[in-house]
Image (cartoon, rainbow, N blue to C red; front, side):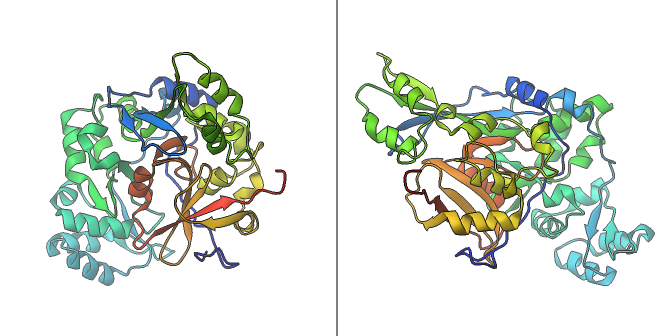
Length: 403
């Protein structure tokens, strides 16, 4: 995909490792969301009005994780395009001790398979011995290959703050200490990929599933529009209806504005019907029947649609939808603008929808594990800012006359 969305544009897929969620997960996940007594944060005031928000975490329910097969506790590093000699050069150049490197590469199990993939089997001591710079370099290389799901799609630690991320959880100190030692930086974020090292300390399958649930919880926000009688309602109605092209939420906005003492209106009530239904939920069985899990581009391009258009699961058709129905725009952005993350080659590897100020609507990954969330653009940058030289380009829906 070129920055101008030329005919050579392509969308890049982004997958996550974990298995499907059911509709039951939606209910239980919202029950387990925690605000953790976090502070009330404020967006900058703009045409969207005055918005406050607070962080919560969505966690996988035990009823779903009970069906999750626990992975083997042995860490594997797969290199799809390296010979053993090339691996020696790379690993020692990255700072790994030569003796450790030779032991791993000379292990009989590391012989290339029929597809030429070389697999190394580092021990926990090997992992803990890596310096931060070496870990960052090696894990960045591992993240290039889908054979390394925990590195290709690592767990993102919000704001790089491990203690805050794990606050109010019951993980044992040993596990928390391992996370601190094994976390690493890439681009604008901090990540954790060594889930297998942690799981081997679980004394039972139930405990292992509980730890997975904690370590894979997703941070999102609940946001509120603060309304008072002195607010300029016409301007707010124009903004939240995309210049009166989608007026479904205006009755709710009008009703809240009429309350004598003002109102704190959850932003979910101002979304168009489809994202209003999807926000904070996981992929449902009826969507799964399409044979492909909704991804970020499906999510972004369906934002204003009354019913979901599953043709947007096809990357070529999604490209055509942008070319034919959207205009490239610059900041300031408006409600419903699609923000595309472009790599150095112009490929769109993620997209999300601008809501207001620093808040966006997103589905982070082509997998049922990832819910639809409202989050900060800064959080999206932490997760998808691993691409060197990435840029963000916004596109705005082109409305037909009278549409």
